[in-house]
Length: 533
Image 1 (spheres, rainbow, N blue to C red):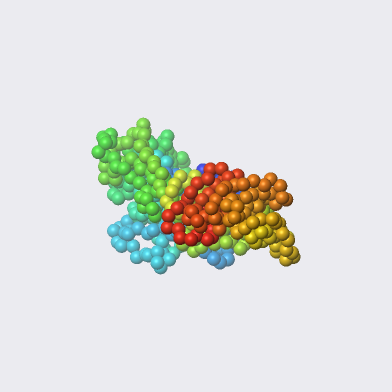
Image 2 (cartoon, rainbow, N blue to C red; image 1 turned 90 degrees about the vertical axis):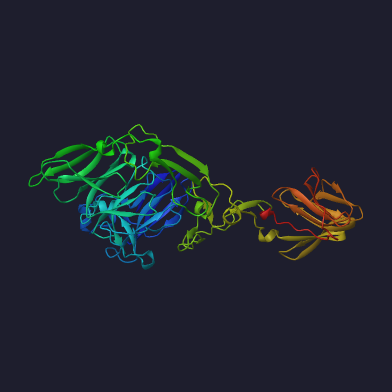
């Protein structure tokens, strides 16, 4: 069984159930055809996997606990299961800032809502756990899930708890920096929503009759009370009308003692006071990750948003300024390539021996004498905009020569008056070229089947086809004693021991150029590494 969890920016997250006990989360390449492991033991619920479970009465649709933070590219929150049997596993919350390449636990708040210090540390496997789809639909939880909006960059509100697992006890938590740090703002079960581009958060008691709303104009730091009805009602939902940029909230509920739908609209614009001025705004970027402040998926995003302590009204027509610039590439901008999987919490990718294929093998169509791009285990995350950074040697594919077929491997060398050929399969020797005066160096172009040699008495570099045709002079030289051919660029290189230079030209002798002419003393040999340039 599988579930498409997310499809955005040219990539697909899919959760696959490998057996009734284990599901993993995979992310596709930009074509959506090849997938690599993103996270093990993701929470995938499917009624098909719960045939004898009472949960099927309440949870009838399959889903994955994966939440894309609406205001931030590449930021995802997910639920992960511990090892163990179905029904006994713990649920953890993890967060990723690089579109699922690496996941980590969610940082805990410093203090509880009552002001007491939080006795919890990531080092002791204690973290913050957030309610998602599973907690929202489970009859023992029924907790309002994570909430974020594109109109409020960086702002996240969620039910959850602090501890070593997701539990039935629930409080309300707020982050204003895309999940890097959190505040515990309300204790107990609450419905919540926000309006005016995140300028006001409104909350109502869940599961108990109430006649008041709480509202905050400083992203949860402080709360004030407002009586929206004269009689207590059971609240079933809290929405904004017509969207999260408005200040009008709609409360759904019924009076205590009998069920009869009651709808109350509340406009909180008065609590925000005056319209915001320029001095009420600040420029904000997501938290620092690796190289470059505020870089997410290769872009530094700078948002204009209302200061936390400014009490003012954005308005429905407010258009937020967003400045973008390209960041240098860092390890955060790459993910594991097909056939590799992340190793622990470090930014390394190792071969996945359960992938069913060798990711380092040459492609099926790879003629001898040509090259292919051999992966180093990484690929740039789809949609990532980074550039430069000096890390391509570690992450980008390496241009590699296609392998020789065993029955075609051979050795060719110069022997003054001849060019000798040795078949390495059966160890047969033969003379390929004869009648030369003083050949001392030889090179071979396998793709076009050319043999190059340098003769120190003829003072020339020559070329001919392997079959003996098409003989031409490539270059006039003094005394070449080292010769090599770069099959990736079709360039011929040589070292002249008399002129004390290293020179290069195209395979047909054109565009001859001196590469190095100083600090050489009796140069005698030359070797190339085409893959490294």
